[in-house]
Length: 337
Image 1 (cartoon, rainbow, N blue to C red):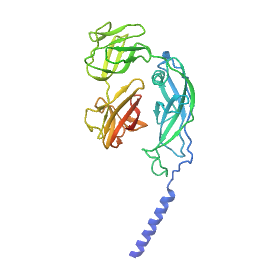
Image 2 (cartoon, helix red, strand yellow):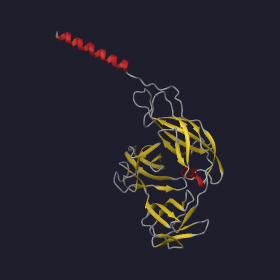
Image 3 (spheres, one colour):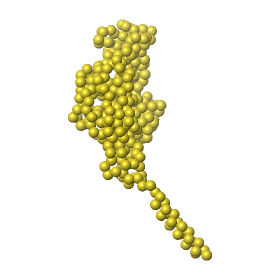
Image 4 (cartoon, rainbow, N blue to C red):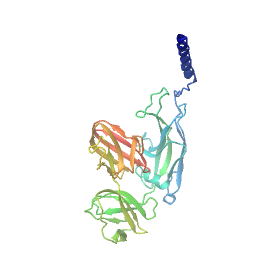
């Protein structure tokens, strides 16, 4: 009886295994997945008076033959440049409605195209697809699949921004008004030993400070600390503010590991990017603001997110370039020297 019981149990297990295999739903990737598309472009003749209006770029999702998670990037470059020097306009987990204000898009395009002229611009949607285990495909988070839409070409006109030039700060720099409404902002590098004034090159009016407020022909504004700050000025309300805005590299691969101070990056106002060259050891890195964790970016080169995963690196000397997109996402490039 004992042997009969063992035999029947064995037969039952075999039946269960075959049943599981039969009931399993297998995910199969198409031999030629269907790439995303751009279906609708908004009018890209940008006007300052419409700076608060929202523009919508409409697209379709990648179809690999199964329900897939992907990250989508709306990118632009000069016509015929083949996206060698592309700018990322937006990133999203859905391509059906990329939304951005006129003023924000204008600020992005000003990094690449001349103001108050018509530029021929190529646009595309790039999808990055990570294939989960069980699909039988090879995509991984470190080497994902990419599927790119056909290029759409459009005429783009961006408008120049009113600006205030910093006089006396030790380097040529400016803050700009995205809406032309007297409110100016920008990331600038300041030195406590170098008071500065703000000059409107169109009107030749010079703003300084009196009793802590912005004032025409006031005294020089004294920085509260050294380094990069976000400088805001309102020439109508006659107010100004300076907030530390220092992006740094932190992590076990950096000289100070996970401790502050972070390895500070430098800002390039012409491209809107942050850059650093340094030696790293085997370990991990992240980007964070002002040596704190309230704002930090991690993830993959194509998809940095707020609080994202640590980024693994191997030892070497690197140049790292960071692009921040809409404050809480971004992309980065890391090049071994």
